[in-house]
Amino acid sequence: MATGNRMLGSARGLRTITEQGDARWAAITALIQEWAPDALVIGVPRHPDGAPHEMTARALKFAGQLRGRYRLPVVEVDERYTSVEAQSQGARDLDAASAALILEQFFREHP
Image 1 (cartoon, helix red, strand yellow):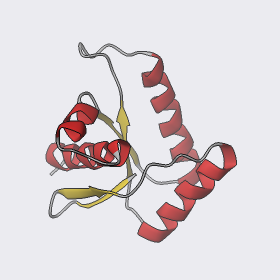
Image 2 (cartoon, one colour; image 1 turned 120 degrees about the vertical axis):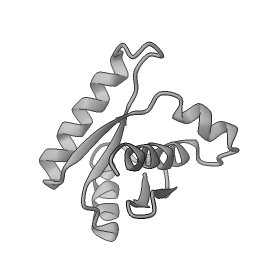
Image 3 (cartoon, rainbow, N blue to C red; image 1 turned 180 degrees about the vertical axis):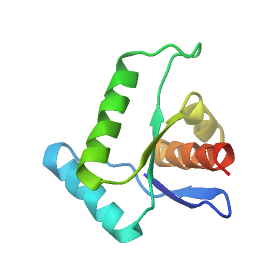
Image 4 (tube, helix red, strand yellow; image 1 turned 30 degrees about the horizontal axis):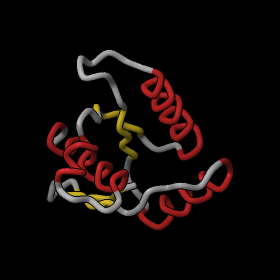
């Protein structure tokens, strides 16, 4: 999870949600209540050539679940290479840092 400011075009990682099942949804709900976002941005993984794979379908299903549960706009962003970039920057929490990069990419693509 990450949070950011569209006007500044910057984001910061919050944390990786490791909870499972209902506990995962409770953690997401708590963060949404705390940060009150205008929209949710999710990364959609793909093969380097852009072709979808199993995780692509899972991410798109998750996007649909977010839309249904929170009634917020959900924007899907190509997340290819964000983990590699986060790792090269020395991220301690790779998933949270990747989420921040995905959010910053969204800000660049939707000024």
